[in-house]
Image (cartoon, rainbow, N blue to C red; front, side, top):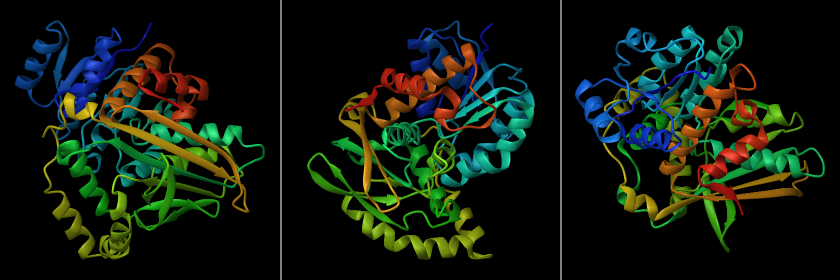
Length: 368
């Protein structure tokens, strides 16, 4: 019998989009959030017969009370560095499948390193960063590794937003997460192992529709997941191209910001300051704005000399729309069939490459 799907953070911007995507797939999630009034209003708009439950990260027991073994918990409650761990711990205690929409490097790292071993012992799966951050790069990277005519030593992945992105193209939760990520040390996979590295330390150029586009380095789930798929990998580069020509400026700011973040006194002060950035249900781009933007992801696999072995490109819809759709797909598949492993898993490890490619296609992201 399929497990229940519990959507925590249903009244937030990404949460609402995910609720709509779940319903579009014929699913009936339990809608959970901290405001009973907002929950009732959301259920009345979507489907008044949906089950709702009040739960709050400030009261971890309220999340635990929602879950049973075999359930699938989908959480969109961010910034995850501030609000994410209670839901993660509740899923572990219940031995439920856990899926989140996090994009914050520090939180992603904690899921893999701190909570992954406990999940493996408990026999449950954790899928962090299962949205536009960072499912597309995992898919493109895995496809490039598979298609290389020899084991690749390096793979570089670039994320780009296409179309006309206005000032209101990002939600309040995204902006709060970005501010929090600036205050935490970054990481990368270099020389065959994970190393500390400031986010934005490197700039890489990719060909994007006939022109050169710059992108800055960032810690991501690909650094953990792709080396498991190809043991010969010595370096994984993940780059965000959202800043365009400002990438070099952000690179220049990365080292002093990282130094402050690591300082014993200034670091906590910086994190306290960024924690004041409003997060949560502060809205985001409307349907018309989302329709004006899309996404493009490129992965390039190379050998140790730098010779290109394979290149894969994916084109898709708006990042928020994709995130909601892929979360809904993952929740449905996990509830019906379970995951292909236990512990903190990459997207390919969780579902298999062919299934993930099909899921992304259903979510509006396909190879070009």
